[in-house]
Length: 67
Length: 310
Figure 1: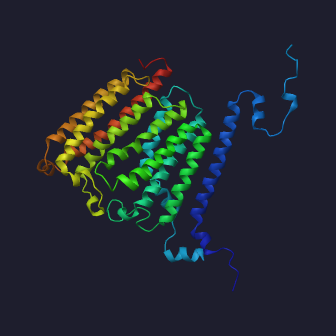
Figure 2: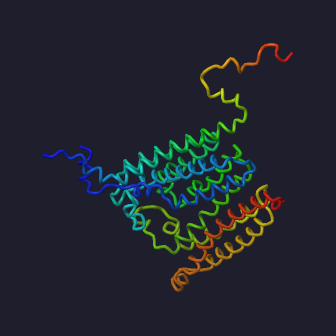
């Protein structure tokens, strides 16, 4: 029996699979878009640190700097 | 084998069948009223966040529709109007509808919370719960006032839209809620008077069947009278104005006249002119809601140019 690479089910479920694909891509686009908008709305660049898990000492004001 | 069992069913559900579970026509009203609630709010919302919020509200409404179809599959099968829905017609399995309803509910609520605020997400969650559990599972089969209390589910969207922008509930959003809440019964009962329904076959207690058509006519007039102060009152809040008030006065007079005409009639008169008045009032009720929310939108647009409002 010849190996049938294209199963009949693939054809039958093509529309549904494309639909799920489009929904997933749209979901990624929404999450990415929301991230961009939320980050831009922070205004101050230093605020990005809130979403960064790495401490950056250079952003901490030096002691006595304001005196 | 999973594909064997799918073939055994003889029909493969497509995306359209799953989309039909979400009740797209109901969704369009939800999108419109939620959008108005969001746009008339005094706090500006970033367009993309606004888009995501409306999408979440629409998907949440669709999810509650899917849960309703899952629960009501038995009665849908017994009524002509609903027998062609995806589950009773066998195109979608009940378990699939339940899965889609629960998954989309979760997605829409969580995404709305992350994109906007917890109050808006809570209101959306409550709306889904109200429609799926309070209305579908409990009231619909228990009381002829089902449509009155169940109408609250359809009244929440502008309140959610307002909460998306402001993060709060205020007199304006409560009155927008009340407007749809009070409008639903006369709108639906006018339809029930002229559509030959078979709710009796499905043992659903609709007012026309439990209390008769005369009682339904009285109810339509009573609820329309109670609707008037809500609609006019909204005109004196911060989102109202002279334009809205003019529209509201005209539309309420029109709707009230229609409700009065229905109240005066009897079954003989209805049969004689093939429910002409009832059909007319039902159409007026559709214009009524669209005109009120459209007028609120116009007021908001006028305010941008320093016009509108009080």
